[in-house]
Length: 420
Ligand code: CAO
Image: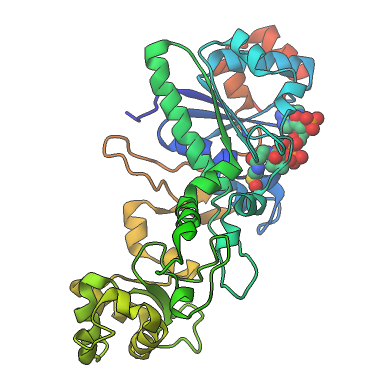
């Protein structure tokens, strides 16, 4: 049995943020029915194409464990089918531009009339207010959520991060909102509206930077490298380069082979509790007792010198050797892993975090499996559906259309070309 077995999801999502959420629900066992525009489908099916005439990796990697039904929700018969889906499903998930669902005639009030038990979950770029009508993409959210202003180096421009905290990050938040609403429905019998704004989700993930914003009011942020370097602080949380977000000084340092390999680096934290071990490992035992080095606050203005010495040592080792030497000593370090290295990591395949998936159009590809492990609800990663692959199945098995009624729906053109 899967955790969400028996729960039906009307998946009206597209691109990345919404599909991330419904894919997780599918992995937890829900029946996810993805509604797509006839003949077109989710725009990502044809974005960043690598295999001609096949669904892109962008689409396949975000839409596992779903069924696909083609449906024109602006056509009268299409609206009838959508209404039936709303009656049958437990959750409707959508991330259209603001107002799109209303324009189709499916306001929250109308949806509640159709099915008061339905949970309706929406992602928008911004919450209610000045920007509520904006269409928003990943990097806009990273910028508006405070992440970009605090990412990068002090002397450079703001930076966005490769982790999709705006899209996938918001999808994760929405997923939690949905299962929470399902839990509450067990007691109240009522559905509710779950809303996540991408700006809010990014801000939630950048929460420690708002912590620092408030600490600035009472003095400089002593754990930031710029403090030790004597660079004055402005009135906003600055970009901190690769400084660690907590109170322990950390940096990214070169390892053996860095001249050829752009990822021959390690993260290295000079944690106060293991300072003496760090001194021994890097060949600076005298720093253990020397005045100005022995105590953490005294070291803050010497971090460049200290990390230069650590780097002189890390440059003599590979990033994996650094890990092997430091881990048993509890010195926190971490190799900078490339996507190539990750895609060859047997350990990640063993846990199901990395999976190989077979696809009829494109053959085998790699994907990230479910990162959340439930001991009593195993995840089988099932390939993404072809466009409209399950239209007939959903119309007949889920919605109960048959005979002339089914023929009427198919002939109306609302559901694309139907293969029985
Ligand atoms: N049948 C008929 N019409 C359909 C349909 C279907 N099955 N599915 C979608 N449509 C229509 C929508 O109703 C909409 O029509 P109107 O403009 O007349 O209301 C139209 O298709 C386009 O939808 P959209 O505006 O949502 O799509 P877009 O490509 O213009 O914008 C995006 C994309 C992501 C910017 C926008 O959807 C958005 O801001 N979403 C919320 C925030 C979000 O999730 N952003 C992250 C996306 S991942 O990077």
